[in-house]
Amino acid sequence: METIIYEGYGPGGTAVMVECLSDNRNRTVAEVRHAFTKTGGNLGTDGFRLLPVQQRKALSPSRKAMKTLSWKRRWKAGAEDVVTYDDGAIDVYTAWEEMGAVRDALEAAGLKADAAEVSMIPSTKADMDAETAPKLLRLIDMLEDCDDVQEVYHNGEISDEVAATL
Image 1 (tube, helix red, strand yellow):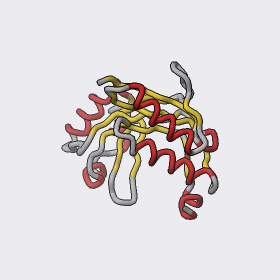
Image 2 (cartoon, helix red, strand yellow; image 1 turned 135 degrees about the horizontal axis):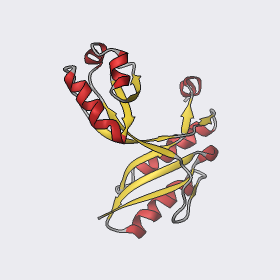
Image 3 (tube, rainbow, N blue to C red; image 1 turned 90 degrees about the horizontal axis):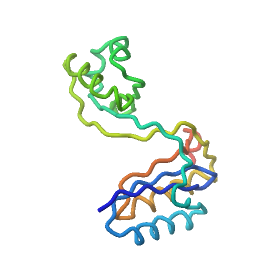
């Protein structure tokens, strides 16, 4: 098994990175290429790099626990961003190198992360309109349906207004 990274352009010029784990490179590239082609995108060539990303670590402690840790202590520990969700979940993002310090600071405050994972965060965003957003979502669905695909990263940004029309 080998890890393979493919990149290409999706609908609306969205940059897409596909991380695969495969025992058959030819089968995997055919499936990934088919998804791009079917949705009006283009798969890049070998060595093609178009999605500038920052590799960051996401830690997910509970929201209740995060309220007990002051903002000043979070940032001092190296947290770059804290994202809260409507369902009460929270993600703490930090640079890969700072992950240990942030995790230790959270644990010292009595907080334990429910999960920790590597995320590729795009440096630039591409706004999706009501026409391109459904096409991008279809591409993502098609890619995620491929057995060898592990992760799909993209720089498409769908506003709440556009999402409400989907």
